[in-house]
Length: 218
Image 1 (cartoon, helix red, strand yellow):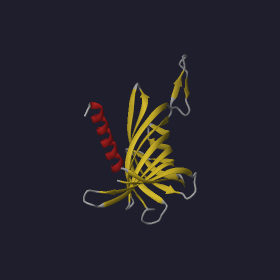
Image 2 (cartoon, one colour; image 1 turned 90 degrees about the vertical axis):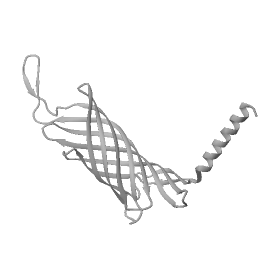
Image 3 (tube, helix red, strand yellow; image 1 turned 30 degrees about the vertical axis):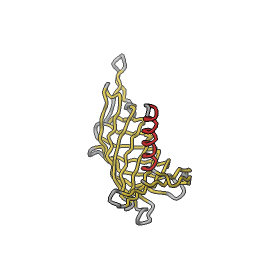
Image 4 (spheres, one colour; image 1 turned 180 degrees about the vertical axis):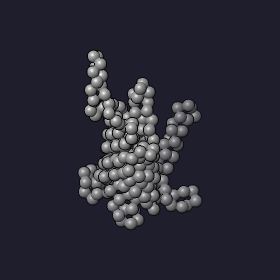
């Protein structure tokens, strides 16, 4: 057997293994409503709030059988998100930031879920206290709404419970930790940990989109 045949045999074997390890039972397109989110958005000990929308992109229903024969069912949801966030740091600044992101959520049959979501956006800070501006002649004037614009990147992960899975209630509760990075901040990157505790409302007919739904066995 020459090298070409060996390579072809190996490629077929790998491809066949992959195909049998993941088989798609069905693919369909269905309309799904977008979700509304609201949360308490705390930067360390400083209070804030956050509002957002989750736009559904894809849903994957997975039926997995382990080597022991135990069956597991879970759902992978993918969303594009838009969020408006704010927190208040006394004597330092108020930070308002608008972000767009991608949320990856994995929900078990019992309703518990985990999620991960990177985001990018724009931050605008408003300095605390009175800020003065001095011109070239030494004259000082009060500068209203003093602050700065920053590019912002956020990475977060969290856990929660989906009441629609077991209680037929159209909402989820969650807790999430985010790390936001603002730059350029004095020629460096400003890091800020943020904790969220909130609610996601699953409306029946709000900005409905046609979403690809996949049923898959493993």
